[in-house]
Length: 78
Image 1: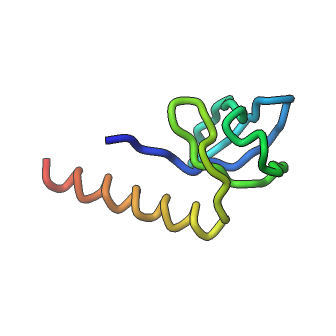
Image 2: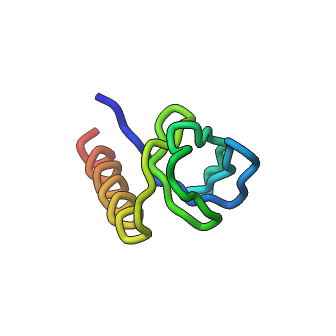
Image 3: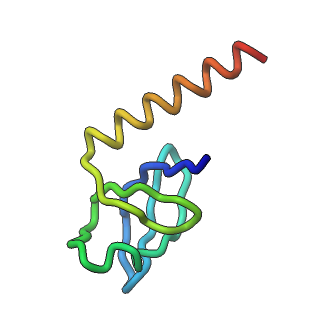
């Protein structure tokens, strides 16, 4: 199973972007989205250092909430 995590762009440098989510920062490749218009503040789905898809802020928030819920349930079952 693969997991893509939503992150927000804070800086763009050519084909790379610096992104942040929940206090975690990463540099990611934008090569897979070279046909899309990508701007500062956009939200992206990130998997192993590559931006896979541009998403809305609402989709990012919803995904973070679901991931948080899954992590919290996992803590209680351990």
